[in-house]
Amino acid sequence: MQYRKFPATEEEVSLFGFGTMRFPVIDKDESRIDEEESIRMIRTAIDNGVNYVDTAFMYHGGHSEVVVGKALKDGYREKVYLADKFPVWMIRQAGGIEALFEEQLRRLDVDRIDFYLVHALDQTLWKKVKEKGVLPYLLQLKKKGKIGKLGFSFHDDLSVFKEIVDEFPWEFCQIQLNYIDTEFQAGVEGLRYAGERGLPVIIMEPLKGGKLTEDLPESVSEVWNRSENKRSPAEWAFRYMADFPEVLTILSGVSTMEQVRENLAIFSNEEPLGLNETDRLLVSEAAAEYQRLTKAGCTACRYCMPCPQGINIPVAIDYYNQWYRFHAYRATKRDFELDLPGDQRPSRCTECRECEEKCPQKLPVSDIMRETADLFEKE
Ligand code: SF4
Ligand code: SF4
Image (cartoon, rainbow, N blue to C red; front, side, top):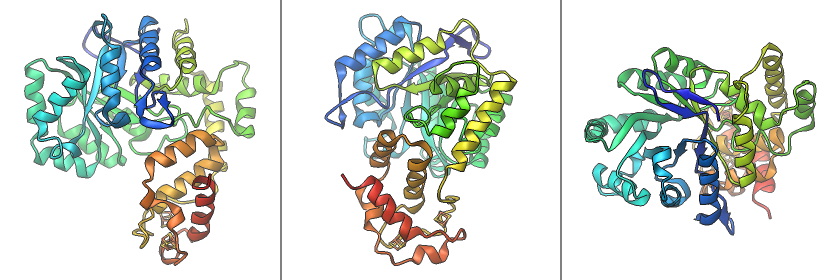
């Protein structure tokens, strides 16, 4: 297993971080985790050198924390850095900041969380964090030893990322990044910005939820086939991320034992993972190919919103594009169902075309909604 040092410490974190957002489930029910298999997967990873396990209050409707807690019994807790996240938006519902944190310790059945992240910060949540006094409370927990390192995970644009990095003495951060989303949210610039300020970065979605590995479009496979190094699409994506020295660990939300074993093989490579100049060119060609396969040039500007039927138009169009870009139909459909509640789905479109009048890209949104509904909402 390859490891990266946490700056200014002797602590070494495995480059493969075990993500627990996509455990195997029973009967497609996200709240019914196949516990036995999930525990076996976590322990196999730890037995083979993984020492970073990441969960969150919300994953699998709260069951992920419970299953992680069970997996870390029998001496496994001492072998890993345990990461969990604080959902600011749940404070009131959970009965306050303290009750929320205590609930997490209870579910995990531990008395300390090593890497604690304020979850999914964007501009609105960051404001709320400051208003609610979340950080002073978390600093107290840190003083008492209940939290190890304090960081945040992030979903907004680059300027908000920089603001959050600069406004608090964070110890690490977590961003979404892969070789096709280099300018999305914090992006590569955000990664470098954090690195320059001494913050190690944890990467999420390195495979874009499996879409960069499942059923590749032929033209993308052709790009990879041109390399004399025979690597799986997952290895290309992980190597792209590992190439950045700012990266501490790369989270992979594995769903099967096969994926665990594939990742273990990649991250246990004798040579440090990374890319040479020829490889880098090839990765940018693959990214450009995905770009070329994008059907609707939606910029997610949201000028079309709100839709009188409540449809989340930019997100629906993003799934429409993903369908044609990735050919990863199973993974894309699963994410569509998780991301878009029934009352925001494109089948509600009445073809009123209000959105089309407001769209600066002149997209035929109502046609796209019809086609997207056919792709995703019909059995
Ligand atoms: S055309 Fe469809 S998507 Fe556009 S505003 Fe009307 S109902 Fe909403
Ligand atoms: S206005 Fe057009 S480009 Fe902007 S989010 Fe809506 S559909 Fe996309």
